[in-house]
Amino acid sequence: MAAAVNTPLPIVVLISGRGSNLQSIIDAIAAGELPVEIRAVISNRPDAQGLQRAARASIATRVVDHRQYPERMAFDAALQAAIDDYRPQLVVLAGFMRILTPALVQHYRGRMINIHPSLLPEFPGLNTHQRVLDAGRKETGATIHFVTEETDGGPAILQARVAVLTGDDADSLAARVLEQEHRVYPVVIRWYAEGRVQLDPQGQVRFDHDVLERPLRLSSESGAPC
Ligand code: GRF
Image 1 (cartoon, rainbow, N blue to C red):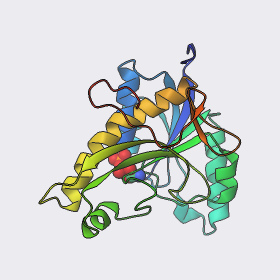
Image 2: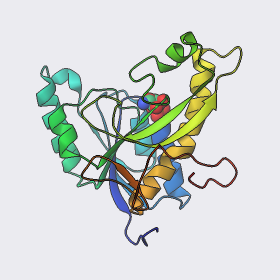
Image 3: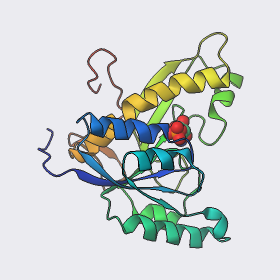
Image 4: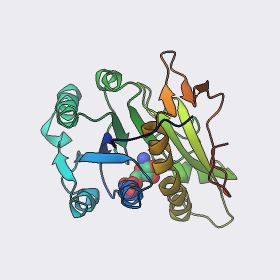
């Protein structure tokens, strides 16, 4: 069951843009619903709107601009050094749009999570919503997963489902999926902080010690995992 949490879990959030998921985490902390401390927000883009959200919440910000690193390895080394300066116990990717090298991913094994706007393993990568529409899917959603070497391919923790409606375009679908992202990302981060969710040495997700056979969902009525 949930472990008692006394000290907030130190986390670092990585972003590249708008930062609305970051905002949902900031808001959940402010509401007393999330026992974590955002030690820093790190962006690979100096103009990321999320940096202003962090600054407004008095959170430290750093930019590691990928354009200043012609080699991916050098960028990742600088990124890792920046992250580790803050000694996070969890690294949260929230719209971070760079592919990470295996060395960096390995360094944070079991300590790095990502949110992707599809029901993985379907539709990894970019332009997700348009591809869902083009494929004629009736349902899509969002997945929170541990990060592994395979882009958008790590073991899934939780999925939120969203119906595709007649007349949807990529923007309307993205907006409804994003609403769900904002609801579920803070919940999964809280579970991690409470020690309820972890990646085991075999690469399986455990929730309350049990191996997850399939990603969790949140019941829409009670908000309980199911
Ligand atoms: C979200 O849809 C997230 O799933 C994807 O990138 C988007 C980021 O949005 N990885 P924001 O920057 O959090 O507003």
